[in-house]
Length: 281
Length: 314
Image (cartoon, rainbow over all chains, first blue to last red; front, side, top):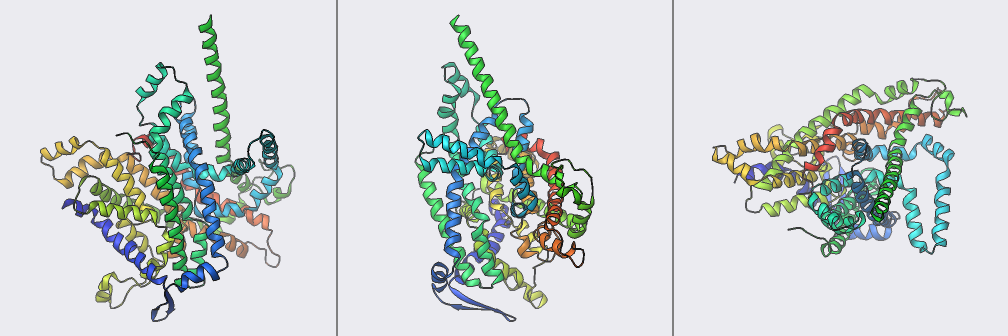
């Protein structure tokens, strides 16, 4: 009874600003919408909008595939990177507090407009050109690794990761936070016991830290996927179709295809993780 | 003999790791801070220093001209005030409503509460783009189940007002609110049941227990949620550029900055130098994030230290 009262504000908002719009959007996606001074006229057209999005529209498929590959490439990197950094930031060393506050800074800075303006900044571009060395550095390393017999696919993946280090660092603030919080809940006795048994730091990580934070790897993977899907070329296209070209029907259909794609990826990831995650109960 | 050698090997390994760690952390910190330093350096440069080969970081001629231009074009002080008012209002309302909902889901189980919580998860999973158009049309002719028509005779247009933000904030459905409800729920679930029971035994009702016992305990997670909510609202371009097109808030001003600059900074006949425009644009970005950095400097200690108790983990 009391529970309902506490949840009520959310419930009202959920129905008004989420659930009804969600159903409306599904309806719009199967209609042509004519907006005029009187209001809007909706005409049911079935799957015509979906067909148009998938077969006629020139930019939809490209944007969709681009966003999906982007996510598939970035998510493993971000999750591994943030776990690694959380482990490091959890160790005791001088200046840890400063290091932590610097690494959480991207949570504050990296979003929306700022990011998109950064990428168009001429000053940045010029400065990057004049420093220039980084590309050469990875090039050397690439050759070294190829000579050592590492498969070409892995080498390109890693070197592209090095080139996008800023993007990866700036997208992993929240994830580092979540991992750090998780690592700190692991009881220190576990580490002490393993140290007495003679385990190295490396073994302690794989035998204790890793299994204990594995549920959080799942949480972070999901968070990263959702986060990187929230703002990219695809959302841009959907907005443009809706608010610049005023084709609300087509735009809604695109949004639903996009949502389904994300849902499928999330389901696959959940299945992959559900068998491997260790829960301490 | 052997033990001392082993000891020294351990010692060397530890030392080597410290060095590697130091290099890694410094390097990555540099990657994060570099754009900010660069903007600061750019913003205090004089126009002439742009093409000077000697100037890389420290300008030859200091100048606050960039700041003056950016402040003028962005209408900075009014924008700052608007953005601050908007972010602060939504932050307070969102935190309050999400704390209520989080507590309701964590501790006050009722019929269907699990189903409703699945609804919270759904709001996190569905991209905002999917429901953008219906919400937009809904706000354009806002009519609360015919209530508005009953009172004023017609529906109201809420676009370009702060109402969309206030309404979604009160009802815990603003930007990323699902995540905040989740954080609060995890936190409240972690508080021992005994605390609550003791309060009931002492005769406190549910409302009193929540306000006097639970909320003071929840301060770490409240700080986290408030910081997230303030910052993300401040930077948000998704909702603000849709609902608030003509109002002056930071993110709309930033996204129209390149255009406004090109319009207002040219010297009449000749087109302005693109590098010069970019310089002012960088100054504008710096001005937009500066308040956030200042706030962060004040709360970061509390924020970072309280992370371990936020209960994001559960």
